[in-house]
Image (cartoon, rainbow, N blue to C red; front, side):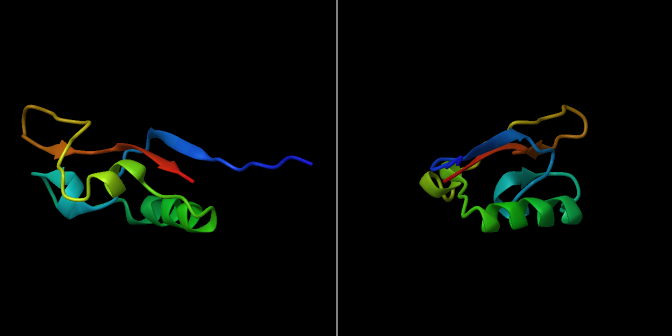
Length: 80
């Protein structure tokens, strides 16, 4: 029997979890269907975004084009 006590799910999800905290510039939209899938996985596996938990108001970005100026945090790790 396989027992998994720790799960880390990470990658370049190409979606913003929280537009207010994780995006600056551009349209204030999110990939709603993709976000729903990530939220379902997160909730079913009781995962947390550890960086956001430790840095609730900090703004950091993993994607920044120069023109137009947009900043997004698209890469994250979910952990239990």
